[in-house]
Length: 108
Length: 132
Image: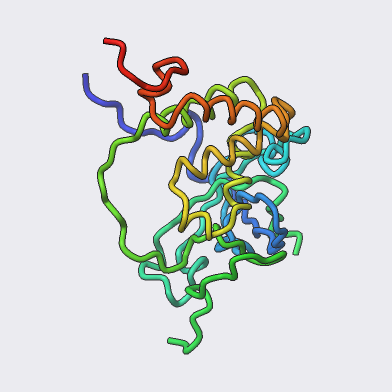
């Protein structure tokens, strides 16, 4: 049996494609257990998909009751992350970041 | 090119704000060590202990990671992977009240009295001579 080609979601055309939801990662640097890598703090990316909700690891790490929060897979360009140092500026990197670290870009 | 190169600077060992020592993404990492190795019995037991105690709900992988991070970079130079794990598992079990430090101390003395090797321990407290 042939492998079915990848198709768009049924009934969806290119014109229905939603606008990318751009977010900025918080620049805060609290000293405790944090899953958001420092090299992405303050960077702007696009929400690629939303996962979860999952319990907040920042609370789980200390054994306290943990809130369930959306986890977003956020897509960044290498040029956004590394600036002029990026070897391949158009390459992408994706990171899964909890909602409370992200602010919609329109809010700025 | 700029003459500053902030992102490759090693962060201070301990700090109360800013990037923490274990958050290494983007820093110069040096060569990858590709050693193949097997694990000792005690290392497998530490792994099993972590799985069992976290499955029972005493702590999560986040608690394991938190303790490993809080040990500081010196621990990563002086202790092996599973030495760090057993320290973290113990810290989490103490925090969740599974046992007290006093109970731990008594158990450690009891185990130490069995002898220094697995062979000694297998003799059930006798001086280690083989019964075969």
